[in-house]
Image 1 (cartoon, rainbow, N blue to C red):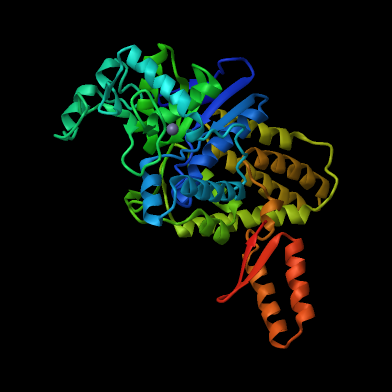
Image 2: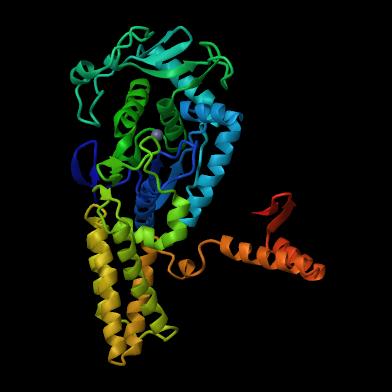
Amino acid sequence: MRLYNTLTRTVDEFSPREPGQVGMYVCGPTVQDVPHLGHARAVIVPDVLRRYLEWTGLEVLHVRNVTDIEDKIIARAEAEGRMAAAVADHYGRVYDEQIARLGVLPPHIVPRATGHVLEMIELIERLIEVGSAYPAGGDVYFAVRSFPGYGKLSGRSVDDLRAGARVDPDERKRDPLDFALWKAAKPGEPSWRSPWGPGRPGWHIECSAMAVKYLGDGFDIHAGGLDLQFPHHENEIAQLEAASGRQFARWWVHNGLLNIGAEKMSKSVGNIITLAEAIDGHGADVLRLYYLQAHYRSPVEFSEERLVEAGTAYARWLAFLRAVGDIEPSAAGSEPDDARRRFVAAMDDDLSTPQALAVLFDLVSAGNAHLAAGRRAEAAALRGAFTELAAVLGFGLERSERPTSVAPLVELLLELREQARARRDFAAADAIRERLAAAGVVVEDTSEGARWHVGG
Ligand SMILES: [Zn+2]
């Protein structure tokens, strides 16, 4: 397989560090808010890469971290009057729920930053030892100029960066480019003990420490959104390579962003479509189809129209599958094998999902032609190739024919229960509540009417 590597700026033949095994680290969420549609792309792209590598026979160890301590989480906790840990726990659960609805394979290891503070402290101590970091007033900073390779990922030179850097007169840093590895705790902030006093790790050191703990030096693939390339990924490399003298990650895979107008979808811009809204409105497979129609490195311009078009195209897939039904396939002719070959050629060409999808659309067209001509067993053979290849791209197919949300159904049952109570039919009202409880939906009666949630 040929895969673009941001580090070399070329499409290189991908070969894992150890034959048959691939270590992949993906930068996970900072859990301070609900995930939005832009976040979906940063999990769908590594999901498709992982599924494809696995389909070709490789074993993938997939690590995706959770940043559960960070400035934004602390700010959110202050705004909500909760503890930072409670904010992180809540939004971490919301994230997991929504990402699972997308049909993304769960990573094998999901390290949380707060569970790895010791590893981060050790890495910082090592950086101080080798002269790449220095403590200053309870903080610790990475000395960017101590690492000759700084800028190699993003293609920037330290001198250009220096010219554009904002100089804060009140800084403890020796150089404006230096960045915090450890931040001294301000009053009321969550903190951990360290050789430099109570504080917390910086965001960049979290990923370096966790990636290398689970995948070792020189692991195969580090993935993330293009918006993380600089400074986050540049800093991850600097920290780890300065400390160990060895290569951090071999392949850097960056997905393009989801833009609305000229801007990326982001909380700070305020142009958010939440992932829950998008899945409720369109279904997980349609969102996946929408994203995979673009090459993973290209930006995607948000368009409601294109999403609706993807929905129409997807409906044709389901119609074909229903039309074929359970017919026994014919002994496979050359058509399914040809399709597999074209699919592999597309995916081997830097994960060209638009071409891979074209193979799926062609299979449906050819299958429909067989059906129209009464060649049902031939159509069934193409269905077999179609469902196999669609699964490699992560489509759930029958899964997404079910309602994507139970909320409207629960609301309907609660309305019927209200009506039963209004006509004093308490037996019926209780029966509805009990049946919902048996299905895992807990109903609580409050002064503002019935509230419900799923689970204990
Ligand atoms: Zn990261």
